[in-house]
Amino acid sequence: MGMMDARTNDSLAALQLLKGLPPDALEDVRAAARIRRVPRNARLFNQGDGPVRAHALIDGYIRISQSGSDGAQVVMRFIRPGDLFGSVALFTDGRYPADADALTDLTEVSWSETDLAQLMDRHHRIATNFIGIIGRRLEEVQNRVRELATQRVEQRIAHTMLRLVRHGGHPTADGITIAFPLRRKDIADICGTTLHSASRTITRWEKAGWLTTRDQRVTVCNLSEIELVAEADQP
Amino acid sequence: MGMMDARTNDSLAALQLLKGLPPDALEDVRAAARIRRVPRNARLFNQGDGPVRAHALIDGYIRISQSGSDGAQVVMRFIRPGDLFGSVALFTDGRYPADADALTDLTEVSWSETDLAQLMDRHHRIATNFIGIIGRRLEEVQNRVRELATQRVEQRIAHTMLRLVRHGGHPTADGITIAFPLRRKDIADICGTTLHSASRTITRWEKAGWLTTRDQRVTVCNLSEIELVAEADQP
DNA sequence: CGCGCCCTTGAGAGTAGTCAAGCTTTGTGG
DNA sequence: CCACAAAGCTTGACTACTCTCAAGGGCGCG
Image (tube, rainbow over all chains, first blue to last red; front, top):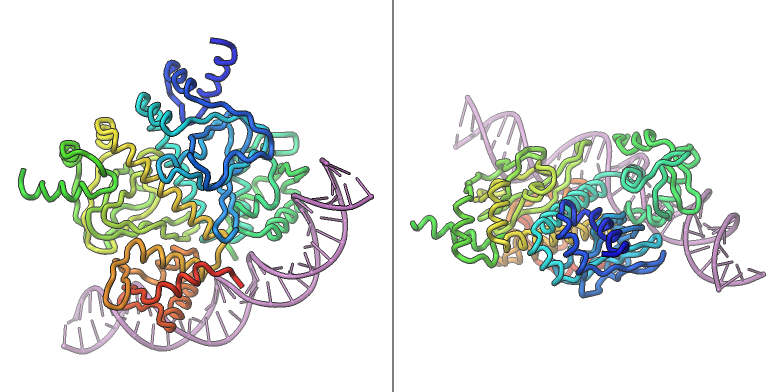
């Protein structure tokens, strides 16, 4: 086994989907995997495309967004290293339900439907992991439904920023920086508001010194103030 | 095997979770099942309760609703005969993420976590069914996120009514009647609006002759008008 | 240098929430 | 069986949050 394979196996072991698998199973999984490198701003797949594969992200960041028949767009989530994505449709209708765009240069692996089915059959742990992953996703999305249904724009933006910081943030000199580029439009499309409202809110927070943005990189300096906005009862 | 067991097995065979299982597997599943009858308006479980069981509804209707730390409430979904419910948490944190209320007298079955795990182990089809079920749920909830994020109240109510009609509707003399009681507050809590806005909209539609409500039973007479509202580009 | 993309900001309009009051239906206990 | 309480529904007036429309500025890239 060459250096390349060893490194690949390490990468695979870090995937949520493959957590707890023994080395020989990992090797089995690797044999069926297709590895791809994708440049920043490329489209990984389009909403409506098929046949679907099960994807996992080794390195980099991805934005998953969905558009309705009316053209309105929503950002569903951001994919971080280790995450599974684009794979739920394997068990439903076989078409990707959303677009996937590379926010950075990235490396992904994927498996075909039949290969994944066989792998799940041989290594039951993969199926269990899969259920846990989409179960947690379901709970997250349901929380988002509650937010959208009950909170105001500023509060939703606050919650979103907190989630992004906790999820995709790494500490820097000035605070916690979100690991991938984030446009105002992205923030709006996550929160179900307009570019304008998002811009106004973020600008206000920037002026208050709670965060800074340079070149689409957001750094949060004052978490606790944002937490206050997130938890505030609307007056 | 008595009459009772035979009827029970028929009921089980109709469950989504058990679709495609051979008779001997059904018998195995039945042996581990707990059957309960629950009266209208009773609470089946509370948000935060544990340990969770996997539930399926034989007969009747259930409302699943979630409340946030701020007290705001959202109706997550309605459970119909054959549906699986309250079981995702088995694979995540082990506590029910929402409340379940009986909208009618009903019959439900449930399995403990360990029993379900063993059943899935013995009958792989159960695991596959489970993945398909929560996968479809995930897509539904994501569509709801898009609706909440991009559409106005009236449009969301229209979509909701259409979904309820297609899902829980049965034809009657005057139109299609939704099979379970539906309060104005329920409609509001599904759509992320207030009781007042929901009331105004439904009353308006009632005056236009598109639907009628008697005793919390909603009958839709004019689907196409409502579809028009649902698809309308906002002027 | 010009074009495209992203961001900011102001003014005005309208959707939907809040507050308040009264009505109808349902359920319960005397 | 009636009466009253509780729960659900309707409606009006007012408020305000948020969107829409419009215009302009900054930055990077071809």
